[in-house]
Amino acid sequence: MSKEVKVGLLAAISLVVLYFGFHFLKGSDIFSRSNIYYVEYDNVDGLTSSNPVLLNGYPVGRVVQIDLVPEKNNMLRVSLDVRKNLPLPEGTKAVLVDGGLLGGKAVRLQMGTSKVMLPNKSLLVSEKEAGLMALLQSQATPVLSHADSLMVNLAIVSEGFKQTGETLNKVLANFDQTGNSLNSILNENKGKIAGLMANLSKLSESLVETEKGIKPLLANANTLVDSLNALSLGATINKAHQTIGELQTLLAGIKAGEGTAGKLLTDDALYQNLNYTMMSLNQLLANFREHPKRYINVSVFGKKDRGPAVSPIDTLLKFKEPAPDTTSR
Image (cartoon, rainbow, N blue to C red; front, side, top):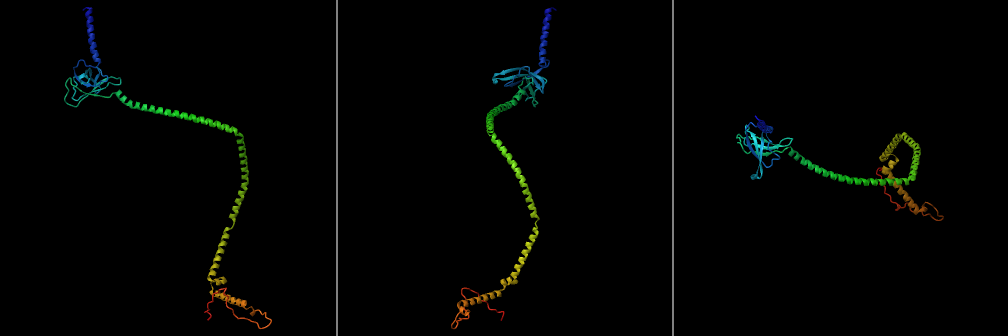
């Protein structure tokens, strides 16, 4: 064989090996037959030819072609090359999912429950599953919104701190002015303050001396209190009780008519006799006043006019007539 023939055969063999090796690396089963199924999406989100078709995470086929369907509002029809030994029941879904952390897309088969199998070149039910990036985006969106609100709140707080800082600066400036004023006042009144402190010192010394003078007075007061406590107050009180008892006994005797005072208060006969005596004395004095010659003789010549022996009772004084004594009869 010539060198040209050998080079041509080597090139042909290399092309065949390259073709089969390329399809082998993509996961295609070159020596087995397969079925073609279709699925339509409104957006494939970066799905390309040769992306895997998975069942329970195991590759069972690949995406062979993606076509645009203008009559269906530019839907995208994806052709799936699936192993022929894997029949698909009716209701099987082709779910468009992320291929993993490294990116890319894949089609995951979700088997139906029907016992009727789909023929070759059938249309599968399409569905999309939110991938990792979509989940991260959905979780990050509220976080970003909260971050925005947090930044706004921080801006408001920082503005408030700015105003507070200005206020504090003003307060500190006022404190500085107040300190300067106090220093000037203290400098102007150092002499007066020194005199005041000296007077306070003298006052404290006077208070000490006064305390020394008060202590003997307090001692004398304590002695006086002890003396008063030592007095026999009990005996005095007993004597007072005894005197009150005797006075009560005396008043009870007078009330019962005992003694001269009791008889004066309770004996009616004594009262009647005294009343009669007073009436007689009144008659005597009235007669003496009307006929004094009866009792005093001052006539030198002639017979003495003695007047009546008895004069009526003086009406200037009123006496109660004594009741007749029935006990003597």
